[in-house]
Structure formats: structure tokens, C-alpha cells
Length: 119
Length: 196
Image (cartoon, rainbow over all chains, first blue to last red; front, side, top):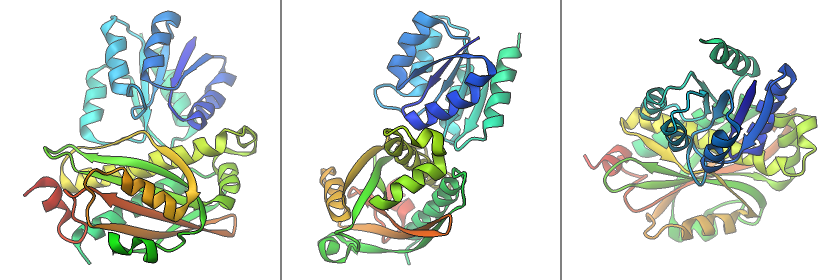
């Protein structure tokens, strides 16, 4: 299974990679929404962990772009933003889960596992 | 003390709690207090103006017609950056020379998000934040640079003194909040931002 980690902070990408790679997932990383859209189109990941606040293109715009190409990729938002409007927008774009930073590693693993096991 | 200032210090306490929960080691962040400082007195009264700091700057933007903006700045003394990085990222990740800046960036992101989430709940409007910028300089120079990023700054700013204790060692930290003219710290923050 392929997972694309999208976050502008190297530290967060490293933490997510450290949690998910030992479980056998193939990992790639993107530093902003623009990179995420390009990699998602070319690499076709099974799941994306997506931050919201990023330079160049934020996570919600990136997700909208990815959905525009009819992609059904599973998406787990991993963000410090916890406000109603962006959360509702993320739900409308069909995310599987929403994790608030700072996160517990086990919470991420179970969210990814659950999202990927859904039919 | 004004309700605007209380709202901001309360927001900072939310941010401190969230940031402390990131650390694998024992990290305690205390917001010691704060004050509102007229811009004319920044040069003389800022405190720690000559201290070498690593700071992270985040714009906080209120989703209102006049787009009022704050800048949220957290600084830690330069000597604290390495132990802070180890505490938050762990020894293995901290060996990457790029990690300290990234940890600081994420501290700013999570701190500013906690504050903006608090303000959004209290004011009943959406509050967005920018991607964080890391600046290393004297604290006074950081404050001047942030001030220079406003076209029309408010006449005052809020300074909050913080202290963090990491595995028993105490380090100085500081936070400042600067705003454009649409935001009034010393009166009702909600009135000035929401225009009601």
C-alpha cells in the first residue's frame, strides 16, 4: 500500500514516516499542496495524510484539486486547525478521518488502518 | 486589564498547553503574564531586546470584511533550541541539522493554531493562520521586522513573558502579538475585530 505524507514541516513528515514505514507502507512525501497534487496524479497513492496550512497551496485546495480528477484516494487530515468551517469543508471533500496535532502515533496508525480497510 | 488582552493571554495559555504536550521529555511552559506596550516604547521597554533568539512568526487573519490581522511571534533563546528539539523530536530525528528549524516552525504552527481556535470560538468567526516563518536574530530586531510587515500597524502591541522548563532546566521565552490598526488590544477585541 502506498501512502503520501503532505506537510510543510520536515519534523511532522519525519514523525509520520517513522510511525507508518515500519508497518510496511511505501511512503512518499510532499512539502505543500502543489507537490501533493502532482505526486498524487503520477504515483496514485492509496492514502494521503494531509496538513491544511501550507505555503504555495493549502491542504483543502490540494484535496479539491485531487478530487477534481475523480480520485477516490483515502485522505486523513492531520492538522492543528480545529475550527468548524475548515473541518466541514474537509468532510465535504470526503476525508476519512481528522487528526489534531500534536498527535498520538497510535491514533494515526489506527486512523490509517481503518481508512484503508474500508471497502 | 482589557477583555481583548485577557482573551489573548488566555489564547496563549491554550497554545502553551498544546505545545507542552508535544514533548517526549518533561516540558512545562508557563505564561508568566503580559502587558500592552505603546509602540513608541518598544525600543526601551521590550525586554530581552539584545538576547539572541530563534523566533517563529505566524500571521493570524480574521475572516471579517476588513481582514484584521495579528502577528503571533514566539521566541526561545538560541541556547534552548537544541535541547528543545531533542525533547520534542527525539535524539534520532534531532541528529538531522534541519530538524531544529522545522521543530520551531511546527511549534509556531501548533501554538498559533491553538490561539486562533480559541479566538474563533470566543469571537464566533473563522480565524485563519499563515504558514510559519522562522527568524533568528536579536529579539528587538525580530520585533522591528515584524512591525515593518504591517502597512498600518496599531499603536500598541502585547508582550507576553513565558518561561519553559525542560528536564529541570529553565529557559527564557517570549511572545509578542502585533496587530494592524483594525485590532485594539486595550479596548474590546471583539468590537474592533467584528465591528459590532
